[in-house]
Amino acid sequence: MTLRNERVRKELMRDISEILRKEIRGLAGVVSILDVEVAHDNSFAKVIYSVLGSEEQIEKTKEVIEKSTPKIRYEVGQRIRLRLTPELKFVYTDSLEKASRVNEILNKISKGEV
Picture 1 (cartoon, rainbow, N blue to C red):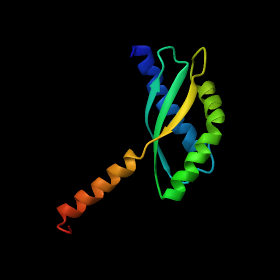
Picture 2 (cartoon, rainbow, N blue to C red):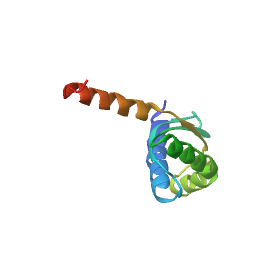
Picture 3 (cartoon, rainbow, N blue to C red):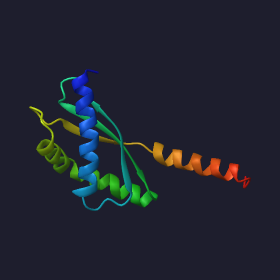
């Protein structure tokens, strides 16, 4: 990855997080952008995200993000200085949820509850 791609990746992570927090309504859980994989020509970006919440909240949030992708891309285009705004593909992962469960179990073990 080039230095320019890395800069774009970090900028996209920051901007998409902010857009989700401030511009997109209807998100049911807490959304975290874990990573953004940017194509070498910046034409495409895969946004890896996780949601903390119940199964219902996760599904609702996934639907809202899917429907809001064009708006998110538009907002990114307004904030980032690129010749072309990258096409965005959002990919859900449950890694935050798993990490939260592991942390909970470790806390119980340290307290002698398990």
